Image (tube, rainbow, N blue to C red):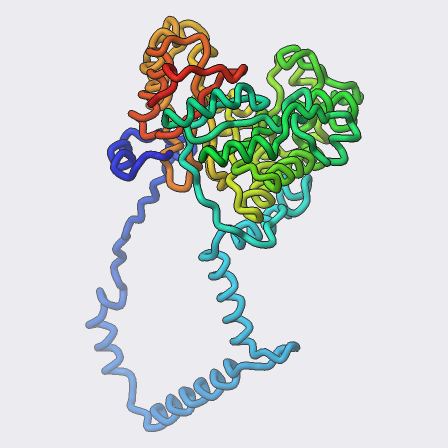
Length: 461
């Protein structure tokens, strides 16, 4: 949950600003006072006029005629003329003004439309085409969540018991992982590429959870898709010669291309199917480009240089498209998982296509940063503090992260619901993460244990 108004007000003076916002331009308007020649020499000029200008009775009459002529000319010039459609010119102007005002003051639907129109002349618009806009918009109710990640519905009964005796009110269930789809989908592309594993009955899991007042969040791994990559190389990242790129840091396997709108729709369609089966919320994971070294990154080819949007623009465009179809049209909250490092490093975010500042303004219901202290290097410096071992004091480390990161405090930013590390930690280390979140105004979180193994002692009551 975002910080409450009081907390936001107290932290305003310390809020982080991007370098662009720091570059303030001050324009000084100087009032130069110029002496008036007429005024300075007024007595002399007026004296000359008195001595040399003779009265002329025709002058007032000429002036009157000229004034009448101007009035008549203005009347006919300004009279409304009918345009080709039958509307008067003045009415047409009024309609244009009204239309512009309605775009400026309307809700998300009109905003998306105007954004799409603007993008037609941008690199993003030319590359992807018009932005998908929702045909109808349903209201979205935000769920305040404290969840357990269960993978393929692991240890379901035991975890339900834990939830019934703690503050846990939701489970994150894998709908689609990098190695396949875990429920019985009817998606044609999934069946075609052999992605269906059917590890649990989704409808039965949803039913049992709802009987215990537990919400189900469906997790979908988007672009790290080994099955789709192996069967549809045309949808993968390649080099300029058309050779598949392999990524050692991602299992030495190819990565599907986040610029591919076919891949976008594949994941969106799986989400929509799961919603029809009772899933309460959709969570996209691996909404990013692969991690790799400089050599591999330099070889990646997405199109003619100068015609391809940035990686950040591609990811944001995918999320906007997904939001329109899932959150806007179906009224189901959409969330996205974010690399923890991008909260404090814009460079790392640029490399994988996740920009914390802009992704939070897309309108997604929730963002879930994965700030696992054990994933940070020794001697990491955060908020001016050097952490010899970030995991040694999880409270202090996460607190430093959120003292560095300030974008989540800005108006209109998505709700923040962090993943917390729930493996290899003592109770003190585990709860230290939760205390840090709460002390920074975040009351939602998700326990992460890849095996779905939890005990009541390690779950906040």
